[in-house]
Image 1 (cartoon, rainbow, N blue to C red):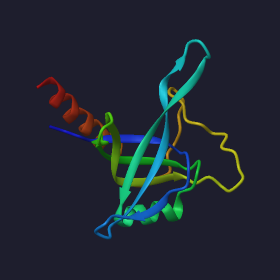
Image 2 (tube, rainbow, N blue to C red):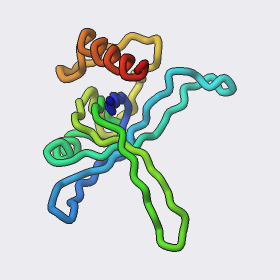
Image 3 (cartoon, rainbow, N blue to C red):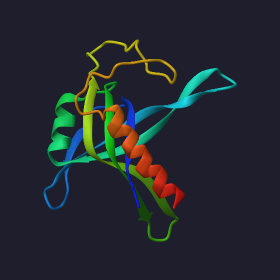
Image 4 (cartoon, one colour):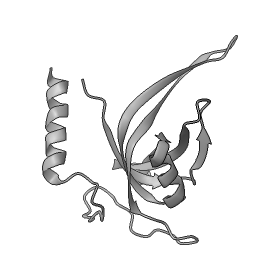
Length: 149
């Protein structure tokens, strides 16, 4: 079985650090990820807004270096939680637990980002941590094998 996710998107807010009851540092951020197709009615790319949790040193670095509008690459896993409120409805939420966050592009304060990434356009991602072509193809192969089984 494989539970691995790779996302590239822009943060929608600054990350605030918090602590668990056990004293572990964590932060929660929302990442806007463009869909790979345009909405036929509006001819625009829509985005999914995905909640991402980061822990420990990763959370501290993200809070320090990533601001609203920063372009990030996230590698992690899908996690679900069940929120059970006594006497009320039970809710299920799905989010991402980040294992690694790469800072692709920082947004300068007060600036607007003009170079959006859209499917079919070429963009060189200036980061050492992003998987190379071979690593990415290997991960896709493993994922496809697990789906076929």
